[in-house]
Image (cartoon, rainbow, N blue to C red; front, top):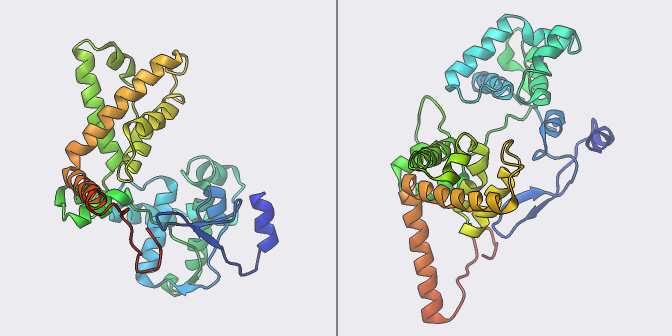
Length: 306
């Protein structure tokens, strides 16, 4: 379906109508093809209007190449160097010219983290370097950048929490920080400690707690996820973990509740500023309701009622 939609609108300028959710976040309505879609969707989309790369744009196009290959945890300058090394080696040109050759296919289609977007970036860089000055190239390729748990970023900024801000990349650093991996490591430490003390539940979980298991709970903690909600989120991830799938449902539910408690406690221990800000806002909201018997509501500058 997404390929059919892409063929229908190929070489046309089109727009994505959006819906706003209750938080004011905008989501494209298109169910099959959008910039929020999977790798195939994103790899097919270009901006209708091109812009000259310039030195900064060329640098970010190289970083994008490295990101789409799976080098997104490296410092930015190392990503630039990696991209320049494969450009100099002729690998990018080879993919652009003969993408289906065995050597090219094994590199971009089987090795890259996001093969379709990586291939599109190879085409863009190949076209840029076909000019005498690549910086003069008129590019229309989107270079995707993502926040690091936006909710925690907002709370860290609101509370001027330098420690929490560093964990979510609000503070300059050579290497990008990974909030989900950090919380996962802390949860694993607590599980290992409990296992050493003889907890059978912890012993069963040892080696099975990954970044993916805790990610959704960390992400939604700033939106007020409850312990029950966190348990359901983690249960869904545990159902995907090899080695735990065959356990009885009651046992997996116990594990999920145990991990939900540990995840939320670990998060609070690392992001004290965010936790304190959330507690304060909740306290103020309760006091407003208690004293005025009215719900807490306001209208944002953009006109959205909250």
